[in-house]
Length: 123
Length: 301
Image (cartoon, rainbow over all chains, first blue to last red; front, side, top):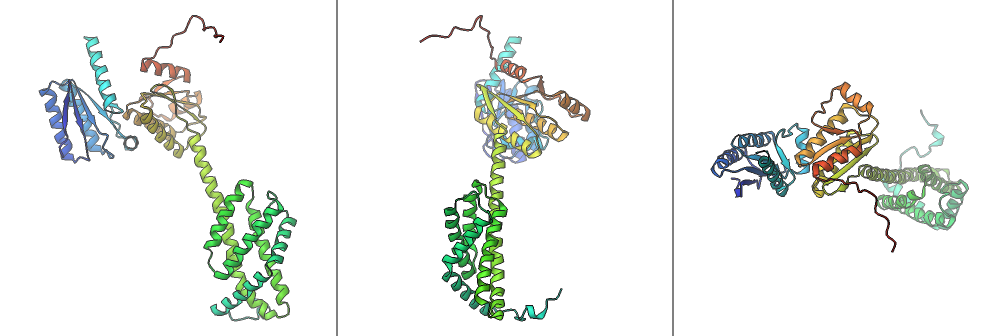
């Protein structure tokens, strides 16, 4: 199932609605990275609230998305990881190092706003 | 070991039919002498100083229902009703401090009282007495077993429940400011408790929408590598939910242990004490605490 990607201001929001196959995940990665350039997005939010399982491939794909989007000029934040999923992930050693995370969509947007402000302050 | 023949005249085990007949006879005997046997039993309970937590009237009332249930179990050969009654009775008497030996004691006393009445009744017909006892003993044993097991099970259930309650109480997650939680840990952390701690913390992070959590381990006396790794996992899991964790109050001993066993705590933010941790958390959240020049004078209404 294809993941809908919404554009909201300078940000892209990908909201995962159901369990994804590896092929779906790869497709999500391709289209997100492509759209970061197309819409000149400054931030990407991947919402995983609906996922109750997160395997190593999914975690690696999320990390890849983050790194690739960063190379194309957008910060990525993963939002909505469930407590049980988070616990299972750390037990498997899947800790998403170097990837920003936030509680939910609202927090994710706030995080990206703060990042943008800091970038402006630096400039 | 062989038993002398004369002590066991009924050399053939009684048939099921015969047992049923004997039990019927036994039950009607017990029904007939209900009042007298019940009183005798209650008297013996008082004399043996069992069930001291209960008044004499209570003992008599309970004795009556135990007696009736006992006779019914003998009659029907089914133990469900007795089991349910034993559980119910245990539920009532455990909070009053009745001990296991007392419960076992009173059931054995009843057994004794009934056996004596059988001796008195059949003392002239030794053969008959033996056969009656053959029928009575297995059933009586099972009844004693059922009641004792019911009591112990109920006790264990209560203990489990209390353990659960203590565990819940021992890990409070408190909100000290908007979006700031503290989790003071006191006592020994075993793997089970560590796991529960993490689960509770993660749930609290979500419900309170916390951004920063201060875990204070001043009250933890010792820590091994398992617990340390679990702490690291808790920190990482919290980060996945978007919360930063600050660990405070590592004692010199724990610091030394962690360095010696080589647990990697580089990913963890640590601050000396709880106060420092809360100040750091406030800084992260953008709070600023201002000291007023003088405390405001209390208003007189």
